[in-house]
Length: 302
Ligand code: 3HC
Image (cartoon, rainbow, N blue to C red; front, side, top):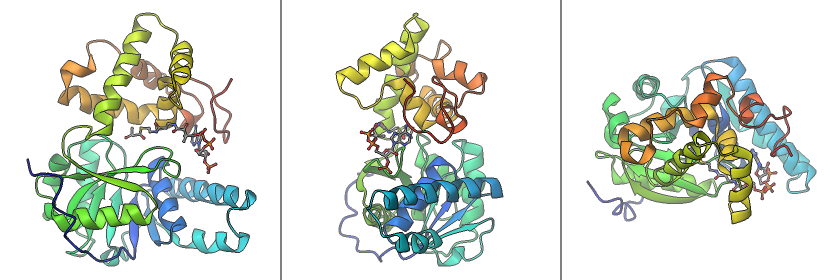
């Protein structure tokens, strides 16, 4: 495989305009972060309800900054209006980087990527926020795979400093350089990594989730596991973290990781996330996961 390094010498233009596909937890968070740090962004979804949620979340995060005295009230409107919600691809030919953040399903991602590639310019970089799906595999849907890479944010986007930029087999140095520049402009620390299911962080994190599920299967209480891991020093135990990430996303990602690394994922038993998923418990996003939440209240219930 090509080395992750080698792109640094590639000077590229500043990202003037970004776009995000999917206004869910991740897409909405990425659009907010882009706007907050000064890069105007289109936020496209297929449903008005999705867009409303994304805009609402951005607006809440900005109000919190104002209430804490971290932002002048007058600035809030300008930032909010630099997020352009849209249901169409109009104007996508002038976008420098499009971040795809739709559902973690390879078929849907292939279709969306093929679709957006027809709407952007030959120079636009398309970056997928996939958690686990190989970038070289996603690139098979594209006619210009050199313009494509991974740009993996972590949840909650505005609070987590790291972004993984993933180099697929055909990704160009220019695409990497521009995506790193966009991540930096958003105030994030970018690392460039090679491609494999789960990249770097989730290749470490998902076997940990599998270990958690194994313990639950063996009869351990998830709340106790959380307490122990939090005492041990992690900011969130695994059950609560899965609620924050989204159980549905967790289940999709576990499938990809189990296919890529069957020996590490122990998929020969029903994972705790599968049980939650089948009970329609998706985590904080629908107020019920391992824990029950009050809508609009962040934080683990006591
Ligand atoms: N859900 C959403 N946002 C939350 C949250 C929650 N449960 N808990 C806290 N936050 C937000 C707060 O709103 C706050 O934002 P603000 O500054 O705008 O108010 C910000 O996080 C910091 O919160 P606090 O000041 O209360 O700080 P904490 O010390 O409680 O830290 C945290 C919060 C940064 C979220 C910390 O608990 C943490 O680091 N948790 C681990 C998160 C993590 O590991 N994320 C990666 C998940 S894996 C992933 O996303 C990859 C994917 O591909 C699967």
